[in-house]
Length: 119
Image (cartoon, rainbow, N blue to C red; front, top):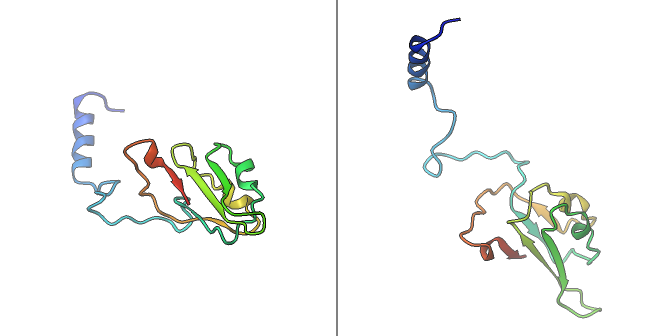
């Protein structure tokens, strides 16, 4: 095994001409796997208010509020992306398929308020 400056120089030259391992995002094309767990979607018309998603969320990032009357169930899901670990346990727990995910990674915010989203 060679040691010293010769090994380091050879390694540096090899990487100068190699293809980069990363892309220049947002200038480069972003390819995301279809099963990537990203943005959470909520369909309030399918929600029955069982709150299994709230109970099963390991990060306590979800709350569900009933905005309607007892007869008219109008649910609103509040998701705190700052707490969410994107495990999608909420998606797996929902029996009515009211919660789903999409492969969207652009979820950054400039303040904690920006990270709390009402769906």
